[in-house]
Every structure is written in structure tokens, then in C-alpha cells.
Length: 165
Image 1 (cartoon, rainbow, N blue to C red):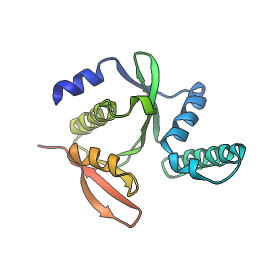
Image 2: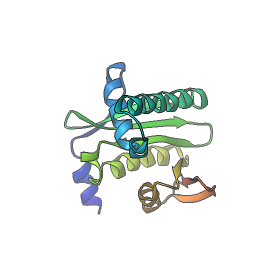
Image 3: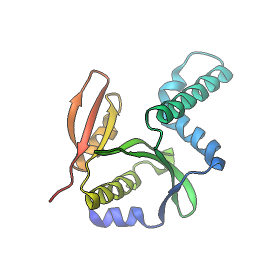
Image 4: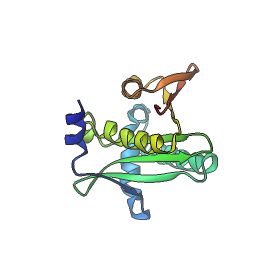
């Protein structure tokens, strides 16, 4: 399993996002939200709703986590994903992690999260995230990386990973 992670991480770079990444990040958000494509309406109306939801997410993160750091994940120089984190007083929060459809299931998310865990291990800090109940795939990945459910609501679960030793 560790060998697969190393293979997946080969050529993987997590870099700070830049203003020029906006179109990629918007497109990525749209691909990560297939539920928004179910909206009954003209294509232009759906496009507007997706844009509105993307801006709402960005604004919400900015208001609730003004010190959040936003990254683009690249594989061999090509943008394939996005990571947003916040280093709070007591934990590192994974606010958003998404990959383009072609990059899903390749181990990139696991490699990125293991990098976050490694950083947290070095400063002896837990890593937390919220996973929506309609995203059991993400939940499964976090649990496989040692995260535990700490809080549960009808719509989401808060998962936390604690550094060892």
C-alpha cells in the first residue's frame, strides 16, 4: 500500500493557488458538485447557480477561516486538484479537497492527506474535516487514513485524526 502511495505521489506538487487559477478552480468545483447538474432549467441558469454556489463557498471560507491557505494540486505540471486548509489554534482543518474526474481514484487524495498528516505529526496537532453524509466515498477514505468520527449530524460528520506518540 505504501508503494502505491509513493507511485501516486511521484510528480505530485501542492502549490499555493494564484489568481490565474480561478477558471480551473471554478471548473473543478463544478465537476465536484454533480448534484448541481440535476437542477431543472436552461444550461445558462444551471451555470449561474454553479457560479453562485462556488462564490458562496469561497466567501464562506473567507469569513469563517480568514487565514485559510488555498493550494492547487498538480501532477507533472498539470492542475488536477485543490486543497484548502486552516491552521487553527488547536487543529489543522481540511476545508476542501477535490480532484478532476480523471484524477479521482488514483491515490492522489490519499497522498495529499498523508502530507497534511505528516505536517500535523511534526507539530503534534490533530487534523479535522467535515464530510457530508451524501459523500460516503470521502468518508471511507478519511476513515482508512485513521480519522475517527467525533461529531455527527443528519447532514455531516466531523472526523478527526490524532498524531501518534
